[in-house]
Length: 159
Image 1: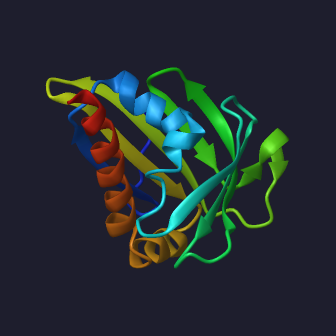
Image 2 (image 1 turned 60 degrees about the horizontal axis):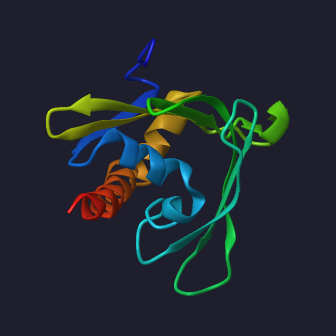
C-alpha cells in the first residue's frame, strides 16, 4: 500500500496480469523465474543475491549483447509481505548498510483483480531531478517492457 504519493518525486506504472497473484508472486520471488523477465530482452539478468526479508540483499547483474555480466542493481529489501508487496531500495545494501549512491525506492504491489492480478510499481526518488532523469532514461518503456515479460511468463503458466 502506497502511503503517500508525490508526483514531483514519484513514477507509477501498472498492469493487469491475466494470472493468479500466487504465480506473479512466485515469478518475483524465485530467482530463476525472476531472471527471465527482470531486464528488457534481449539483455539477460543474473540474480547474485535475493534475500527476501527486510534488510536482505537484492543484487542483480546484466549482460547486454551476449557480453559479460556487469552490475545492474545493488539494493536492500525493506519489506516483503507474502503475496502482496515487495519494497526495495538502492539507498541501502544488504544488512541495512548505506549505499554509495541512492537513487530510488520501489514498492511493488499485487492485488487480486477479476482478470487476474493488478500489478503496480511505484518508484520514489529523492529529488525531482532524479525522478525526471529516470523518466527520461525510459522508465515507462523499460518498466513497461519488463512488466510485459512478466505477464507473458506467468500467463503461459496458466494455459
